[in-house]
Amino acid sequence: MKQLDDFIKDLKTIFEDRLKCVFIYGSKSSLEQEQLCDDINLMIITQDLCGEDIKKCSLPAQKWMGKGLFKKKNPEPVFIGENEWFNSADVYAMEYSDIKENHRILYGADYTEQIDVKKEDLRIQCERETKNLLMKFRSHYLLYANSKKTIEYSFLPAIKSCMAIFKAILRLKDIEVPKSPHEITDKINQICAIDKTLFEKLLCQKEKHCHMTKSEIYTTADKIVSELTKLLEYVNNI
Image 1 (cartoon, helix red, strand yellow):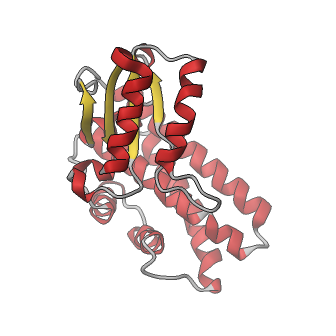
Image 2 (cartoon, rainbow, N blue to C red; image 1 turned 120 degrees about the horizontal axis):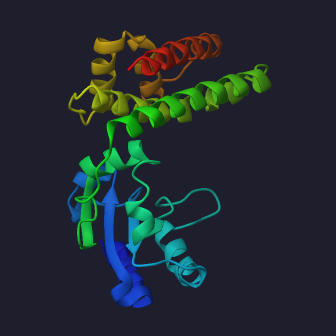
């Protein structure tokens, strides 16, 4: 992929030998380079990172993102200093766990090999993220209950957060995390009895395979509050 090669070339020019590692993380990490086209998550690890570095990377990063008026071709790349990378596994235990299982090195050494995610850190973040999601969703529902369309818009970030939480729960229970979100939902249903129908409906909407009627929106929102409350109780007891 020329755009990716050009971005890494720009990073090498800016950082020289201070550029330590560039890798893809997330679902696109399993694709071959010729299959990559957009929506690619990139992590850039450098020996150190200062404001001047960020300034120099601004234009190449925006070019990589394909930033336009309405949408971006790729998400914002994550820049992180070497020491910060190694010192953040406790705070970002969920993200680091996922990165360790789903990444592909494009340049430099594999900095994920030296990361050890502790289960207690993973459990604490999982509980915090579940509680934050529940509180944010309830707050959003409170403020926008009279707008069905606005309530519906909140379903997409909710299911995305739920999938990250589900994966963390499976790792806490030493269960292999499947690649398919539908298989993940099925495994979670087997261990903590979530409303599988609700989460399948949210996944279907996320994948744009189905559309909710106006009458379904409030019913779905009510169920999300109920299921997140149940999920939080389960995580609290792990």
